[in-house]
Image (tube, rainbow, N blue to C red):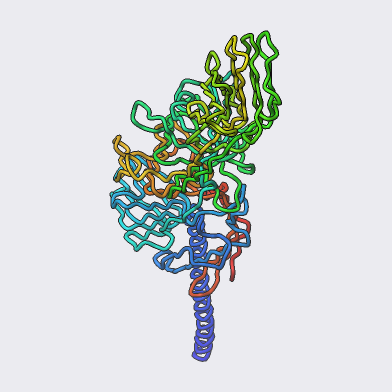
Length: 626
């Protein structure tokens, strides 16, 4: 019995030992499985966190090397996880930008001289900005406002208590090299040919042509409510605004204040605002010289910029005045002449061809014993000598005419001048010289600047010299050698933003009349879509519309100071200040624990061409590495 008991105990001990070994192995394996499971859950959570982090930030996940984009602390599942993001080839590329051209380095760049200017948000504003924002002064965000920047925010001072969100925030910071005026040049240095605002004609469209617009009052009569339910189409080209008329309010401001008005610059499409102009075709550039400016308080305003390999600028405020071009005094002389008899006698100047030019030969009219009239008609004056964009500064008519035997006509001879633009003719007295006192070719000058004061009036003028003999004086003889019109002109250079007055007054305060912005758009009734760069380094820009449902700017803003009162309307989650659209991001995310890769995910992030970052995310592949 003792032997059997010992044998049983030995066998039982062996069995228990084996079971304990198996139990220990199972416990160890279970613990390792539990650890791996927790690590896997942590890796999953880290990748999902990375996706949620980068989906709304278009600066992360573009084509390039892998960068750390998210980390999960050890407090979650006891495992620290790091995630790297690498953009696939073409990820987030700007190749889908319609129209091409260069891009500003920043979405917003302000260059103020006053310490309180820079990027200033109004109370209640909540703009979303894609791209980098730099101000070399202050970024002001009041308590009731908020600023979201999908890019970097750099400023010297961050003022206010409103929430600020940016990929990176450097405030206060030294002014970076990119916080200087990029110095974009204007496409013109001198003013273009004058243009006239069209009439409010029947139909749905009022069409404007490129050129120099001097009258704010003429524009305001159309867009201020006097021409409702119209599309005001500015055809492609350069428009220079320098308003010479001083409005009753004391401003030189073009005002768009009609909720039915639709202002479109560029090639028109069949789509509705904000896609009314075609970015793939030539657009417009609005240049505001001196103290001229634009305000939009009701209606829609949409500009597509010119096609350009350089910067595509839609609104331009010059930083320097270009020199005026003083033209030479240009003589206009005739190429066609006729001598026409008037009255009962066939009185003529003969030969008529000798009256064409002021030279050594002259046409002659000999009086009859009956009172008669002789006329010489001159035409064909140069039609291209005076540039269309010239400002006439002097106009002097030189007439070479003489008489014989010291007998004057019964009435003074006249020279009637007919402007080329169809304006009413004006007769000027043209008293001839006595032959005994004046050699052939002697001229008398007549000031005709009151009549010939534009290139359109000067180029292609016609004139008529008329003389009447004195009845009963058979020996009266009149000579006409010719006439020339001497034109002096100046081509004005474009003018920089006014260094005086409300444009230069700082700080810009939208609630006062002592300061003003080169571009101002305010209120819930105004809508704006400027698809080119706004360049106004010496002026304020004020974008304070509410309830907007589209990108207000799409190619950056350079201004002395930028006032933002923008809010988005219900249903629109995209950016209000943006850079051009980009391709969807294709991103490879890799989660690592302790340097070992544990999970990879390939995702596509649809950014709505930059207008709605992270609108949707598609997981193409999700791989667990064991």
